Amino acid sequence: MSSQTPSPRPVPASSGGERRKPRVAVVFGGRSSEHAISVVTAGAVLRAIDREKYDVLPIGITTDGRWALTADEPERMAIANRELPSVERLAESSEGSVVLPVDPGNREVVYSEPGAVPKALGDVDVVFPMLHGPYGEDGTLQGLLELSGVPYVGAGVLASAVGMDKEYMKRVFVSFGLPVGPYEVIRPRAWEREPAAARQRIVEFAEEHGWPLFVKPARAGSSFGISKVEGPDDLDAAVEEARRHDPKVIVEALLRGREIECGVLEYEDGPRASVPAEIPPVSSHAFYDFEAKYIDAADGIVPAPLTEEQTRRVQELAVAAFEAASCEGLVRADFFLLDSGEFVINEINTMPGFTPISMYPRMWQESGVSYPELVDRLLEAALRRATGLR
Image (cartoon, rainbow, N blue to C red):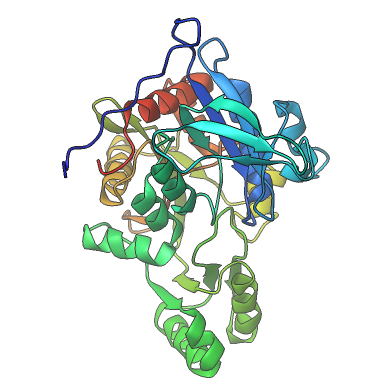
């Protein structure tokens, strides 16, 4: 058996012999608690894709996991009057399903409804997976696309899984010599079988590193399920809130300093870092939570007011994190600039938000890459890559 990496399959010609436009399936929604933010993000991307260059097929995944055909109507995919959108409201049918065949030799997408003849929707040449959180950003969808032989935007299976699991993300960073803050992990069995012992571990962690601390789901994003805990009396409620989103919980020490973010984008010659941004304290929120990010639209400072040396350092660390986790396409790396002057990496996001107010596109806009160009670069990078081992 050959171990060579397959070459990307060229876009086939149309029935008339002319080379057709690549078809992009924008997949969004999903089963995670970040369903609505995925819809918002996909709407922004649909508006930005160059329709002269690409054909587009929007596919939404409902909260119960059904792949639905949706209308190409980005204006219906935004947050309006503090109301979050959903795939269920966008789906053209409450029962129809889109099927992507798990066959590397066949990229034809099929749509079927009960009692009707399945309808072929044509080949898909590249997938733009705009899913956030588990069941989409964590390597599960990426594995399906690898089996299907369809190129896709962003990180592969391993990097997606590492980027979703805050415990193993930190373990990878430590193994590559990147600075991380103190943390403790409470696994499902520990809390379910010996909660008193698990609670005592957190208390001892706090005694060593100080209160307050942050209790988080280990595999969730958009700040869902995170609590800032001031003392032992609030601990149980915080753990249970995190466990509503993920049975595995991570506890992190409070790091006193400034929140700095940096974007990484894959170019033909390798990954490059954007100008960094700063997330200032939000007076109306205890921390940069979901409402601060998406509802009340807290403003980040782009570019961050850093010295040249600090800017260079955080850009180096962002690219190093991208490489350490074997990422592809894009990453947003989040840091703390401590009062001591040291940068500590908090986490990476392998599919950061692409909403109009999201920090990743804003950082690249300030770096000279417009929103439409950013989307185009990501699609071109995905089309250049083959699926499989690479």
